[in-house]
Image (cartoon, rainbow, N blue to C red):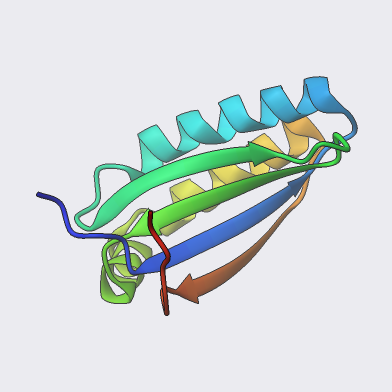
Length: 108
């Protein structure tokens, strides 16, 4: 059984409308598959669309904070950042990232 995620990278992308939200989520899902998902400790990425049509929130789950930082150190940062910049430009969006550690959970 895979361990529960303990570290989260949460990115908010700006959108103009609900149609753009779907395009942004699709593009950044492909980005996750191509640039991020193969790294050890990666859990998943979930994309949420705000009901006002203005934000797409990506919640990227990592098994540990160390796994996330290893990805940042070991990945092709130059290529990854260039791909992000292209996506931002093509989708007319910007991203703002914050990171979080899990400190509690409630389950049924």
